[in-house]
Image (cartoon, rainbow over all chains, first blue to last red; front, side, top):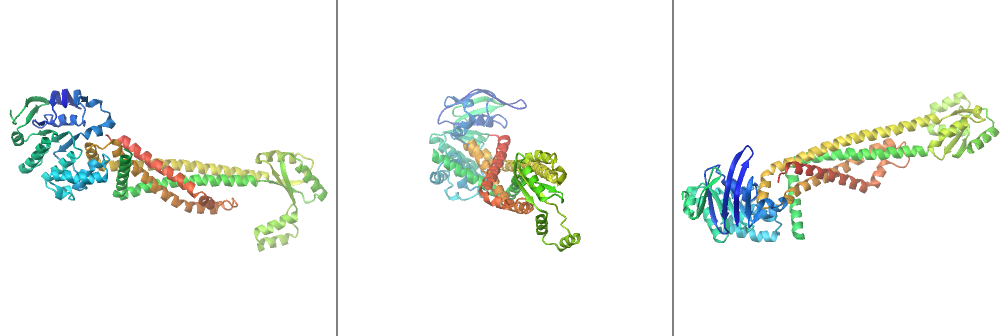
Length: 226
Length: 306
């Protein structure tokens, strides 16, 4: 479903983020991308949701080269991918409900649809009773759940999580990981970038290790060190 | 699909409205400067229209007076009148006797006792009889005057008052043109300033919502959806500014019409303003919205990287 073919990415100032990366991710997989800071994990994910374009090589989604997607069609493509980040990226002046409904509003869903779908998804992540709270009234773990709910609202085929547990304590981290596993069990592909050794070891799923922009290992049922 | 478009349009409009009221003082300042620009431009346009109507009015009422020497007999006067009337392009020749002229003069000065005393002192009527000549076109007076000056009765003529009128018309023409030019330059400067200020306001909105745009993009908002609120914000600036500008216009027109009232008979600018209120409002509104949208558009094109 996702195919990186000899992908290279060089940022201005000749900073090589990725070098000759080839990787195939099948539908329904749960892949952890690990590596130290600056290894190229985030860049690898950004190429997938077309926030960045590769300098060389191709990134294909269902056989289609992402570089060929017209700029104005990108928003529609991005609705296939739910994104979760370390810093949550929530709007502080909007309630939990609004933060999630926002994603449906921009897609032109009716108020009725929004009022049905948002509580449903908030229930799945366990925040049904906090819909009217603001982000600063929530714990870190809860904020990440809001972010996850927002990522799920379009029923994406892929969830991209870039260090989602980076700012969380171990308990909250595990809550988020369990949710990601649940989503994966329902058929959604999950790509998790992390350097949380404990999380990766517990998952026991495929692990791709990056170092200095190159893939150094790719293990089917891996631990942090496979 | 159409329903979805309307939904999005409604939502982006609401967002634009929120932006507008969220930064109230910034919006207030932007509307003020935009209103001032619209006001200067529309006031200039109205002044131009008034000036032109004054000039036309004077041109239509223009005539020349041929003052005859006091010793000209009545038969000669009739002959001269006939001869003047026979000059091509002359539409009418009206004879005003010196007694009539004195009556008119006394009426015009409003029975001022000082003037009445002065006339009594002279004892005799100091005014001349005259022929008031109207031509079919203002350009023809030069020709008519030279025909009269070269005629057989030129020695019976005391003076012709054409030259003075001509200078007045020239002066008014120049004044109207100058005022128009000054207004255009001032209006141009104000328009430029207001575009810059509106542009900057929209830019500030964009800056304060940078994070929001990033999130909007991530959740799949189209470029249009991100841009529309700012276009609406620009439109709102235009609407409010035109309301203020149109509200201010009566003050000017009242002032100008009282000044111009002495020169234009019935056509008071104030009346004109109310007669064409809707057209003026529509024009100012359209212009205001155009300015707002142009400013937003420039800001979006320049600063919103999607």
